[in-house]
Amino acid sequence: MSVSEAEIQLGQSRALEELKALRSSIDNIDAALVHMLAERFKCTQKVGVLKATNDLPAADPAREKIQIERLRQLASDAQLDPDFAEKFLNFIVREVIRHHEAIAAETGN
Ligand SMILES: C=C(O[C@@H]1C=C(C(=O)O)C=C[C@H]1O)C(=O)O
Image (cartoon, rainbow, N blue to C red):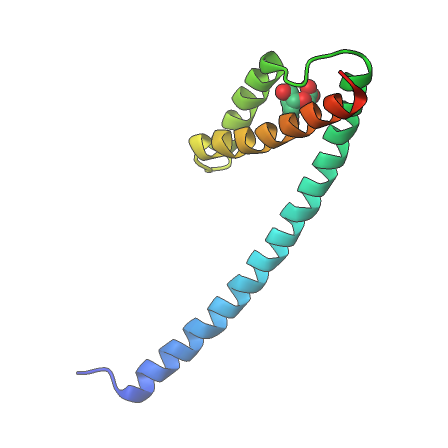
């Protein structure tokens, strides 16, 4: 028995409803990510000032190593690809270090 045009349309309209609900959740998650990143950068900005005014280096590879190990484990436990989690952290940390170098340059260090 073939699937009628009406059944196809019903299936599609249900799929579109589900897509809409999923996209609404994705939009909420994206908003949360932006707010969390904004808070993280507020903290790292303060760390940058602290480092620049106390002659400390912008980057701390030992700290990063610990963070990567921790994040990889958290990702693995949460069924998220640990390689992706590491790349994501490195992407953020690179930007933070760039900010720290800029703060140090402004401060004259
Ligand atoms: C924020 C810091 O500075 C840098 C940025 C880090 C980060 O974004 O988590 C971690 C280590 C540092 O290379 C820090 O030293 O804690």
